[in-house]
Image (cartoon, rainbow, N blue to C red; front, side, top):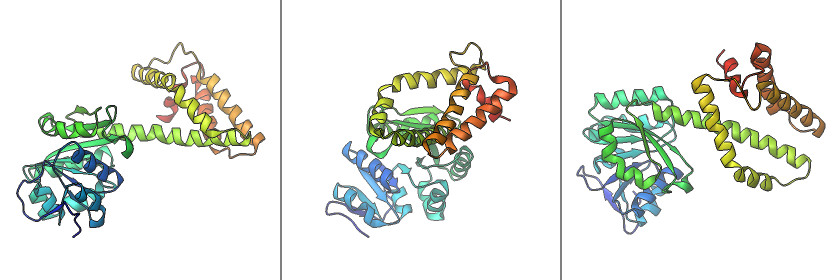
Length: 303
């Protein structure tokens, strides 16, 4: 066991802390540190005790087991790599028993089905379960705009709301349907995957012309309100199934993307990204959606 000078070890099962954090990777450690800085008493546990040293130095208690950590607080937040890793920790007989009658908040990564499976396990064992997703990097935790979305019982959410609000000013309870937060997390990840890949191809374009990529990043940041308005518009178009009267048609956008393929060949850079996008848009145009909004490409994605 490794504890800092001001930390303490937890071995019993008496409520001693306001909140427990299980999992001390970069995000979990940041959650714990932010809660400590907000004035909460915090118990922590991690398979590698060494990761707790900086937190115990700040006053956190280090539990000698996951079950002792769960028993130390009325609220346990688990933030590990994925839901399977969480289940490996939580679904031991000792930890399950320690969590009974308490509130468990899952802030790891998983699918909506995994969230529902976790809720079913928790319900069968008398545990109040909330499933959440953190839409932020560790450096943004605690910010006024930082978003954490949480799904599950409204009553359980109200019990943990003050603690979660300390972690994210943009905290939102999505509703009682347990898979909602996870679904939104997956949707945001899909958006980010396209953004990351698109940005990297943009960097290839600029580097081929000996231009600065950091200046491009600053430009994107400057026009982010316009990009945000476009995202809102796309959501409304798809939700209302109203693809008519576009400012830019799918055919026009598709032609622009095909031009990106030619540019890649001319510059001698990788063409995988524009080729993939051009083929997808061509399928949509060939299917007769050319005059519609460019997000009508979703119609071929649906099959």
